[in-house]
Image 1 (cartoon, rainbow, N blue to C red):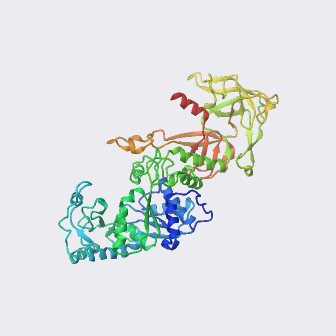
Image 2 (cartoon, helix red, strand yellow):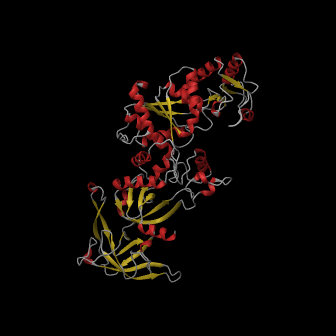
Image 3 (tube, rainbow, N blue to C red):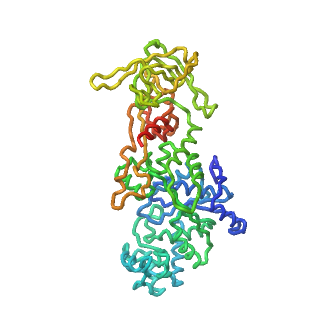
Length: 566
């Protein structure tokens, strides 16, 4: 079932595994484990879906079972082949391959026959009330529902109307098919729920064959039953729908899977509503579904996240029965841990200031050996050119150093990564703005590699690039899309888009990068030493490279500044 690299099943236990273990021990479902991932193709999948994908496919792997990919394509006005294709790509990217590919539309004829059977049993009826009338007659949590004028139509009349609905004789909204259960039920989902509605719209697979479509609650359980799913794993909001799931299957005496609910993933600073994500795309608040600030799998893939890190993250947060809010730092730490092992290092200067080493020979260029990845000896080394004129980060210099700032300042010596010890002797300023534009330094030629023969110590090591050999690139620095940690706490009546972070994207048009990055292609990842992990963007072209920041490194000076500010 899995593709070439099988994701290792988690060793951690959870309540769903406990249920499956008990079922297997009792012989239920003949000790089979058959799960499914059933997304609606009405948008791109997001990080929350990754948890469900990893759970459903992971359980199938763990128990040597099967997992289906099934598209819940019962709403033709919102669904599209674009979304179908993107979902397939996302599942594969996470490292999984479905055993069977199905669509709810595969079962339209069968489910229509199930509906006719319910009508014949007196368990469903055609209601001609308006949407508002149906809502009012259903009652509230404290007030029982009331029967509408069409609830007692005869079986013959209901069958005739239902078949004419299918034949296209009525406009949208003229009739619906409802289950006939209990209008006084304490569970609102059992108060004669809607099963079918009229919708004259072209379907992405069935075209104009159908003009009535079953609702999700009606389709879900029957699809599971037809596919002989053993454990139908849903997010917690479907817990109140389980009685209807069970009722629909039991009244037709069909094969009965077990529905199990778990808490969905909620992350700080992230919006998981497909409807609102679509609004972000349609209003150009982001560049598209794969904007690296989006929580979509397409977005995080473009940003440079790895499938291995996503699976590790989903494994770490586990599966619970209680809704909660996970700090985004948990996700970011999972990304850092994975990229730290697999990413080669390079030096890049995002906000450059020029350094001239006055006592370095004018025409000399040295090739310094640098380690590609200290976590992976097999990654080897590379040669980095060193010359008289360099660029360093502007943040690595302070004319009047603050307490606990140990980087470069006048009269202070620092280590250049893989290079020499240098000392700042003076600064050159723009006379019109008084901005520092150049640092004049000296170097100790006996300290190649960064160590002084006399054993003197320096407190800071900074990165650099040779000005004559640097490549210029656009660098995109991404931050949280939302300012508010818990987007569910957006004040009532205030539009949620008001809480978008205006600094979620900062574009640096002319960063200076080490020449080894010139061969990188879209999707390639690396660590800019001391700055973070970066990925080449799909918009990168030869001569005009674009790098996306995937996630920052932990920066001690930034932590000190934040602590001081608080």
